[in-house]
Length: 76
Image (cartoon, rainbow, N blue to C red):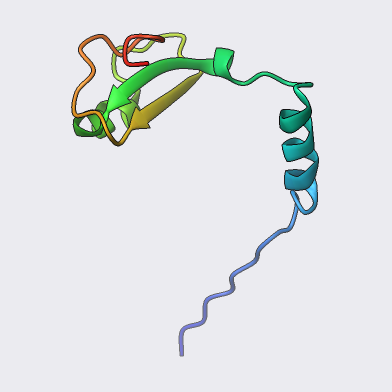
């Protein structure tokens, strides 16, 4: 007989409400963390980070097919 033990953790329990409160109050600003924006046809490039040295946060816009230059502000 083969067995599999699965172990989970609740490390981040209770942190989402705190984060949401901080965002809603304006205490933190997240837009500046986005370094690259991609279209839906560029998901693989966004996930692999190919050609994005120094990127911090890459996002994919589902309503956009392709972003020619996936740097910040090019698709917004």
